[in-house]
Amino acid sequence: MMGRTLIINGSRFFVLIATQVFLLKNFGYYNLSVPYLYILFILLLPFGIPNFLLFFLAFITGLTVDIFYDTLGLNAIACTVMAFVRIVFISVTVQRDGFDNEPEPSPGIMGFRWFAFYSTILTLFHHLFLFSFEVFRFSELGFTLLRALLSSCFTVFLILITEFAFFHKKTR
Amino acid sequence: MRNLWLFISKHNAFFLLVFFFTISLIIFMSNNSFQRASVWNSSNQLVGKAYERANEFRSYLSLAKTNDSLAAENARLRNQFKTSFYDESIQKVIVKDSIFKRQYSYIVAKVINNSVHQKNNYLTINRGSKHGIRKGMGVTASSGVVGIVLNVSENFSTIRSLLHSETKISASVDGNIGSLIWGEGNFDSRFAILKDIQSHLVIKRGTRVVSSEFSLFPPGTNIGYATESETRDPNNALNIRVKLDTDYAKLQYVYVIINLLAEEQLSLEAQNKVE
Image 1 (cartoon, one colour):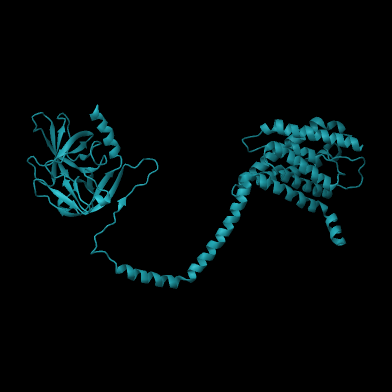
Image 2 (cartoon, chains in turn cyan, purple):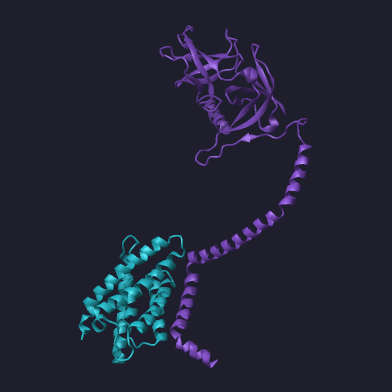
């Protein structure tokens, strides 16, 4: 079971990063709404993952995207924050016991409403940090918030679409 | 020590956040020049503001001392009033403009000798070659054209006033160019004659007469206004009597016009003669 999780997450990593840097990088609505679908990888990591590994994977994921985006460290910051929010969110809303064979936070297992809420919160945090660190000053706060909000809408939309399109089979 | 480890492992998520956040922040700062620059800028601003405040406070404390020193300086300067000195300094009125290249600059001069009742009138001003005045430069007053620099010594210049039988100034009325002269039966210092205007034109009384593009003066410098016109010439040109704006009898300060592009123009025109 451990090997299967590893393969699934590994291939997911490559597919999502490739989609992000080769396809979605060219998307966007006037720099106002930019999708960052690759965070789905961090969203879907299994519940049982150790905190250190989660942080490390989030950091590496962000850094990989940064290398392609030429913004070294920016996505890494956002992903690190997002990993922390993920830990807090899961510890608040999910009972740790009662899981078998490393389930993951997908809508098939946790239900659509929980997953929508979960992805919205995490995406919001990720984008908020991403855009505010990208601008790096307070003078354009309103515009930055607007960008983060609109981009979050786009990203969440893409995440839900992707979940329905590709990962529906695992529904039990 | 053990309690510390317990505390850290209990809240490991937070400490991991701090750890990874710091690493990414360091990478971010050291690789993105804009963010690095803005961090240093904002801290510099803080330091600068702090110094500014401190300095403000300090200067307020020393107000009395400053007052004393200013009063002493005033007294010292009063002793140096230069009514008895020859004024060496020149005031150049300079217009700064980044769009246009400046063509004219002005030197202020005081009229120290003047005449209006001769056949050929001259002025003397207290500026000379030392101050950059050369023969042939135009001279105006605030009200309009005055004349042309005739001779220059070190500290003084003489000006052939408009009220001189040999002074001819290219002037235009309604865009029609003629030459402005004085004398020829007109020895009134308030009037001049604008010659060689085509006779079919009707020039209304009161039309402005200004210097033309071809004159020494900046185009559009005031000269006066037309009062009456007559055709007295054998070649049928129109002569216009011009009421001068400048009251030559009361001239006090004049401006010598330095045409910065004159040399270039003259050297170009000199080439025409060679061929």
